[in-house]
Length: 462
Ligand SMILES: Cc1ncc(COP(=O)(O)O)c(C=O)c1O
Image (tube, rainbow, N blue to C red; front, side):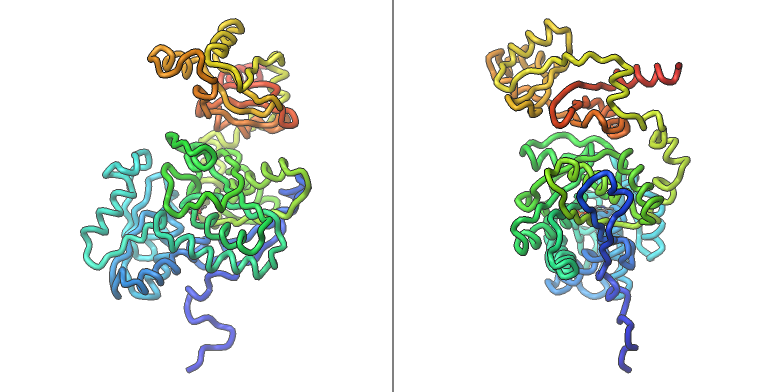
């Protein structure tokens, strides 16, 4: 019998064709227009339905797995759902290996598909045998007719977006946008879409949004590998560089924190009716930051990866938000008010980027300060030096006093405008970063975790 008119042959045929809508009140604070592609409308609730289906079709074509085999993946949940849907339709089994910070909803979802779920500790290095990367690999080596999908290094991940997501967007919009922005994890979305758009639209800008604690944006900008620290956002950021990245496709980066992302995720629902996951909040925070730096208004298209119902017990739960300090409104104050209350002096010590390490030590000594921002002749921030980072390498003979100051730069700082909310730097300060405060891009002050503690103790007691 012929398929009923208007019907699709199975659920996999319902992936894609996702609408793009304009953001209204959430984007009011910028002149640029922000549009969002609601990838949570895919049948499995995320953009990862696309890669699950595409990567498995390719694996079968390439003979990597035979009918009835076992699909193994280390997944934060969304890719698991995409793979499980494909497996249900095509008659395969699934084993998923997850890090223990993933939400209960994601784990329950995967089990509901009949998949086996193995939970591993989050805070271990990828090469540790307990990590979810190592466990997934080991399972695939021991189970016959199994295939370790490896969305991180399987280049069919980025090809999915090059061959499917990006052409769909291009067809919908005829390329009527200036900027494409997405949060980054495996790098598949940003690289695949970025490459396609750059081929079609030479002037398009591709912006990646990373999170504080991840190493990717810093690596892309400097080529320097740093150590990741833990964060709560799911799906965004990495502690290594997956093969799916091609940094030539990414023009700019924004970095956002857990708290601002979660508050924005809730705002998206309250003000725009968009029920999306935490990485959507992160993406919109990144889009607003990017838009504020633009000289003229642009059309910014943002891909929202997944659905809010995966986070009902976390981001959308007031108790969870308060218990984790994300709803404390003492942080909803402008940084400029905090500085005023603290009476922080504005004759800020700054050093030029042509200075030597010896000059920096002398300046810190005379001024009695333990950290010193460094700027170029136009006042642009180039780095930060701290007492701790200077003294030990000098004593160990690693640097000499005549060396240029840039050798001793630390990158544990976050740049914010003085009118931004204190909440935008709360996560960074908790991680012992320093906030460098600017006024129209020019450095005017510095804020540390101790300053914020003073501020909070004064406001709570008054
Ligand atoms: C919720 C969420 N947001 C963003 C991303 C990042 O996308 P990509 O892996 O394509 O870089 C992921 C990927 O795991 C995700 O699950």
